[in-house]
Image (spheres, one colour):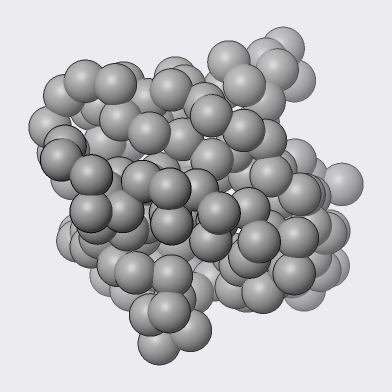
Length: 141
């Protein structure tokens, strides 16, 4: 099984989604930033480094979310999500072509990679996301 970690980054306006480049695997699909874990890193250490490399920001992990398993062709993926906030920096698109901050009700309107879609459709993850967004939305940044 391939272990993949992702950051569900929230702020006072919603959740960050990133669009893959046209030249990537899964061209132009939306996702939560992250990637495949190296065998020598914990998911927590990995996601902090990966987001720094992909978006040039420092994040803080607020809470682990519920992992989901997803089968893509002959590959089985375990997607390990972390609810995060931005500690510092301004987002720079290094691995992606676009990003948006969207409300939780808008998540179903985007063409997500399959594993990411399964992640946000998980009832437990929906509850976690709604709870944290409700607490943080409309607070000054």
